Length: 99
Image (cartoon, rainbow, N blue to C red; front, side, top):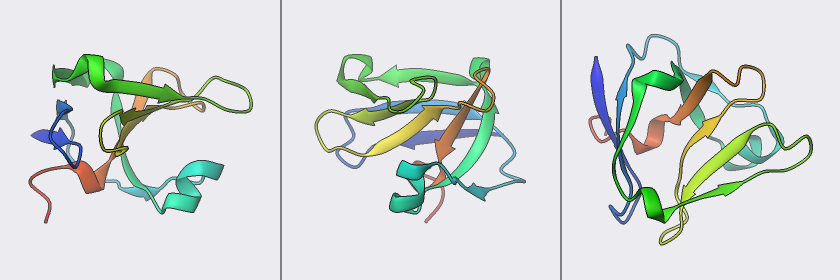
């Protein structure tokens, strides 16, 4: 199923393809502190539809994972996963259809 993902201020918008059947709390040191719940998708199932120039990246430790966030409001929308760099973790709290 296709979902719309957006940051808090609306500067960053993504379309993702996933079934949301498995949602996990990310256990990396930064997401654990934020309480981020993620759905994992293949890289090709994410399309940036707005604000590519507003997306900033934070990396730490091994510098393999890339945590992407909006430079305007600071909302973490998605991350390239260290455990599988062919996938993204989508911040489920940023999926517009989930209230």
